Length: 220
Image (cartoon, rainbow, N blue to C red):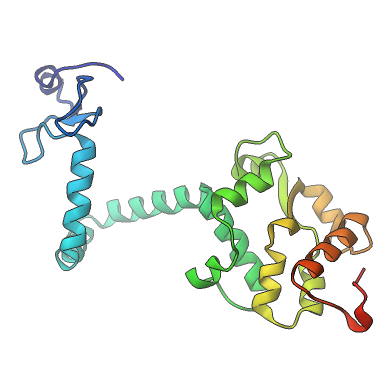
């Protein structure tokens, strides 16, 4: 980051400047330039102060947001669009998308936070699991390069054998049942259950969740 004084930043009409020196609270980051109530205050301090104010004044914050939205409708829509696009590209957004797709197959609607929590893993762990045996750096990159997330044991098979929809969803979304494979390969695999990897995964998941078929045999 380029070193610049506040005086020079004001001359260049810059909203922020960076001296390289820490503020009185030890933050080494940009500071605000313009002569407002936050002028000379660093970004980190401002974020903390604003966060504390929002927490202590929720009603004022809601009213303030509403007023701003009404005065800046187009900008607000653009901010929403950017936020939604950013979320979709994030690890959490990619996991949410898969959750919604999978839950729809079990006819249980979109996943609430409570249902989201039953997965037992975080978006970061989800991403790390899918990418561990690939050359990709993110879930989005893998999708952009023609890969898709495969439910090793097909959702149709799980739905047929597990009547508890929430449990069925949890099994389908278990990390041991998810992997990245080329999209063409995924289409070719479709709902096949006679593949070795599918048989092995059925045995693994059925044992993990203590599920048995009639006669005590694992499905294959």
